[in-house]
Length: 398
Ligand code: SF4
Image (cartoon, rainbow, N blue to C red; front, top):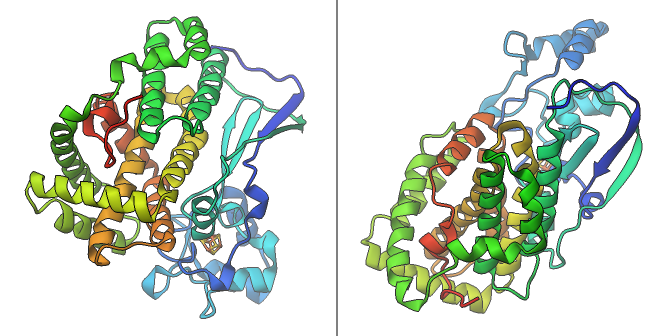
């Protein structure tokens, strides 16, 4: 571990290339972020609110639950400042600077490492989900440098630089559209698994060989042939059924999320596994024909989860679990879409995908407890996950 560093140096920022296209829909938003969640107020803003004078100050102070450090909520878990037009009264009366850090930043998400700040947009915002789900070009993450100063007590620079290199290789793998999607996902999982093994064995320096020839890592998890398809569908049935039972035990952020889970369970897992396999195949064929963008949207979802969370393994060593969570998140979204397709009498459109994506991200990403429990679970899941439980489309031969 590196010891504390106090020298002045440049700060490196990475920002996705679609970042500047984001515009908050404000009063027009179909699912405002100012309802449903408890908004946590940061220390600095609390201090400002406590000192604010006059009528506005008194109103503000009455609107806070001081012990929990959150804004009070009205009926429907709406923030006390959210008016009938779905606009924020605090913003209107006191200006943008009056907002607490959470409200000022959302949907921007910041991951910090020594000398590096990675800024992304959270998929839990419908506008961001729509931006990504309608985007055909691969996402890019340009970097720039600015003056700055950072102090970190302990930071494993060696691990971070291995993770950053691995992430670059993984993003290349995921965005290589010459290779079928299932094989790309499998290569990502295999590579993350190998990096973690090297890390555990104290052999991070060996990772360079993997990065130079990432194909080597996939041999163990290479998808099987067509003869395994039925068995894999059966495994997928068991795996997803358990996954949805597990999702039910997570912290619930929005009441209506529970009915989405119940509905998916009732539509998909109350049937026998043979019925489920037939549904999967029919849905897979329908998606290929009518929603060919799903392959690109799946790529965008994987790229999102890897770009945002993978390097966070520098703090907890859960390298493989982060890659598995990206793959499982994509699969959970796919399952929920299949249930919705059944409910919609076998049809879907892009807005169904946008809604499913942002609602999943809201429940999972906005609870540290949920992310932590899911990553712990992922540590027990086999790393050849994708070939183990199979995709909907016939297995690839790459
Ligand atoms: S969810 Fe996104 S678009 Fe909607 S109000 Fe919040 S930031 Fe704006």
